[in-house]
Length: 467
Image 1 (cartoon, rainbow, N blue to C red):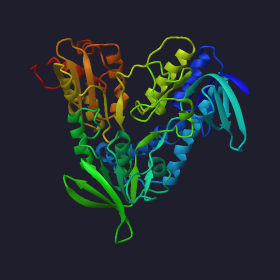
Image 2 (image 1 turned 45 degrees about the vertical axis):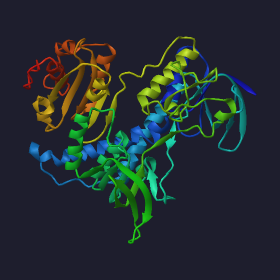
Image 3 (image 1 turned 120 degrees about the vertical axis):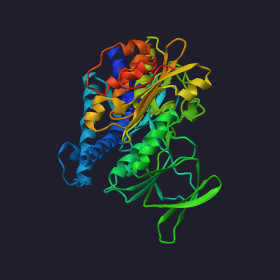
Image 4 (image 1 turned 135 degrees about the vertical axis):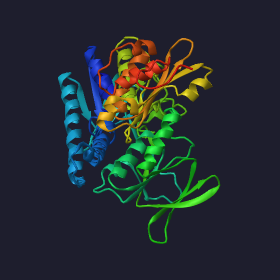
């Protein structure tokens, strides 16, 4: 049996971040990966999806080119060329991860891992060969997988987002199940490509972590873009329609309805832990069916840590990176604790939406006395220059201490701009500090300057006297 210092199961964002951090701290580390480095994010999720979102954005920009004196016919979509672009971008960054592993002398072991005991891991290679390893410490970073269907009548009628990405042409119509950021991103992409799109959410709210005043503005924009959104919809069953197509039966406020679509898309995720043998070694799970950890990312089994989507804490790459880094630091003897405050939330809709921290409703529910600042993107010079005046920034603050509790935004480049607010919240800056910090003019980021000044009724470019 071969012995290793630290073994990491999974080469996605959590896994490779942990591996590189351990190498930086002088530890010998091995990564086990059964598929491609980069995990879901690089291969089947964030990165290829954002290539599609960029294509939709370019198409949308082309439709507005006439306003800049450049009218031209709408460009055709070469879907195969777009698929090639996705694969090229993925290949570049997967290769980048591999180069970094090599540079840090991190061993890559190809195969599927499972625990034989808390310190023994068996790896089955593509050729069926088996190898046993003894590890002093292990990080489980195996990621997540698409949730299987739970709909009655759905043997093979629905698809997941990976299958949607691999389609050779946009379907004429889609029903997207779920009102998450991912669901709304795909809805926007395929609506831009000409599909008839309906988003169906079982709860009464889209994007619950984004302020609902902002979300309501988004819903209006989705409607303008011919995306139908149904909330409070109970999913009943899939059936075969009289015309041979698939129908989804739903119920809203006691009324049943059948919706037809060429493609039905599931967007849920589950932790990728089924084949790891965790029950054999007693690793406990949390209420979300992910691996339970403490703030150091250690599991219920000493010497075994978990990071990324397998914890089901927050399914996004920034959190996966951070969890992997925290696990690595603790394994290397440096004390670190995960901090889940100020996690950015975003969706690549048109216009995009994002937020960080508490919504106004949630802040009030926590008995915080709030003061709110709002700034319309229509009053921002750069937004007007770009012809992207739709949207608003909403700042939620503590009225007594001036603490920024949350920032939520709908508008051009919103997710790119949000990092300033994440940093401000982590650094515990106040609206007054940001409101007296110089921003480039004209720029979209300048809108945050005005929004922060609006908290105290001091915005320069919009009328909002302090109340």
